[in-house]
Image (cartoon, rainbow, N blue to C red; front, side, top):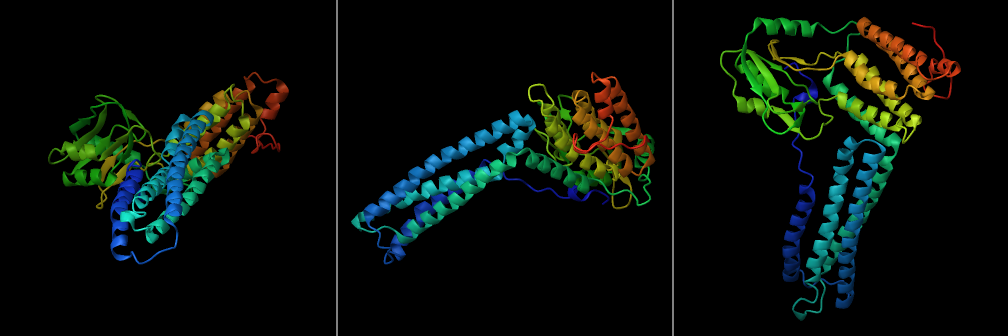
Length: 436
């Protein structure tokens, strides 16, 4: 089937709240069975620790785990609040759903539960003994808890702006690599897939429509394989009217079915359209750009006034645009294994990506010489990078627009002259190229 690689499979994610519950469930079962089995079959083994010492050790571990769990919650709160205030509220999802946080919470709770269970078997029935292997297991759990806690503290290092920007950029690079094939080495555009799609749509009448009903949600992905198989079975063409990243409201038109021998079942069609309350990186190369732009314009706000952070965001934005500029962006036309067009879904054009990446930064950063110089450098770099003539012309028009914006800004003549020079550092090393 002619479709991007990562669209063929989908991994089922475990709800994160279930992770600590699994830890607690397994530990509870072990706490009820292992000490009992140890007393029944391994009572002859002993570590020589007195009953009082074992009770004091297990009590200290159990009470310490409760305090450590409180610290974990405090760290989680700091991470979420810091990301929302310093970067973007949309990054709260990333920090708040870090699996390390939930595994640490589960492991700390498991250590507490098993320490309490072991404590109940110390001097059981007046034996004057403490269970050897259970005490050792509590010690192992304590060591693992300290390792995980150190890992969680190290996560605070990920809050540095460079790490945040790199993470977002990496997500964008992975999506671009998975979704879009490279253009030909000649630099020519990919085959006119959208023109072929328009012809196919016009040749087939609309036989079915599907609308959304419910509270507002965000479309996060299409199950491409399922949609193509349904269209192939009915010899139909499915045209999606909504794109990944769109917010669906009541009565939103989801798709149209053109042609076909019979009507497609609605339930499988709805199941092939995945939604959530928040946007995700999957199948959405616009989302990394959106997050990077959010960070940049927040840094440019008068309350923060940090143009250097905007320049760092532009570093990642430029890299993503370089990669998009050398990719075939008509991935929204999917064919079956016989080469027949079966599915069409909206994807952004090169101009859409350029507008998303630069417009708001240009508007909010027009008074910053540093941002204008870095933005100009990014556009000139794209001019060299893209090989398709139409895309190169779009960049040239955008560069001309940037020059007009600088000339009409509040900057004086000397600052305008500086702003019209390219500089990859923003303010660091002036460069000037001939006009293109």
